[in-house]
Image 1 (cartoon, rainbow over the protein chains, first blue to last red):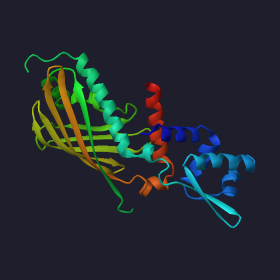
Image 2 (image 1 turned 60 degrees about the vertical axis):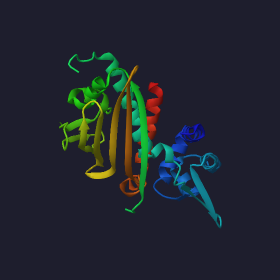
Image 3 (image 1 turned 180 degrees about the vertical axis):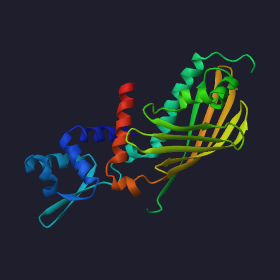
Image 4 (image 1 turned 30 degrees about the horizontal axis):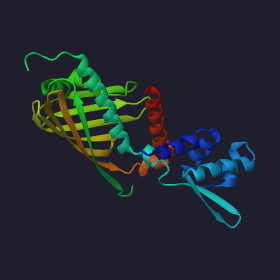
Length: 111
Length: 154
């Protein structure tokens, strides 16, 4: 996995407000007003967090008239969320355990 | 659910300590295999069947702490002792398959150990489909938590 992808995801998720916005946006698009409502922070701060998420490639926004709507990018979690990568990582971890166990276990004489 | 599928083949090569017979033991012996193969210590094992022979079945059913029933069902097609294991398996979550794979494990004796080649040809349903999307963040954050835990453990 490219380091840059890790970096932006971890940075985006390093803030509880940003995590809450992502949590909300994974359920569907939302306007800035809708995102700000449960956040208990001022609108400029909300916009700042959303900009971090947008620059980090996690979300995209679109302005229609005076209303800006944010949505998750379909590939936002691609690398992290992929079952395929997860499967491969799990197998690598399992084989690490296999290697240690084999080294720690004596060979049987009858083979 | 849409028909979005993802196919992937991945190959993992490892030089293992010991002879091919030694390596094969860890794949063919039920207790030995469980020592390295299952990584979810906090999952309740509801069923654990391991019938290691041609046309035999391996069947594991777990309940996760969140109450989700996870299942792995495998069918061994070809077992060549100390040389090769060919099997297919499917992974299910709450009774629904989300991936099916064909796996070949090969063991080759080397002066310094055993070269194991693990080849998995997998078909994954798109995790963005179906109930995952309805549940919102489920998968993404589950995986993230695993990544973070793995990173902390290293």
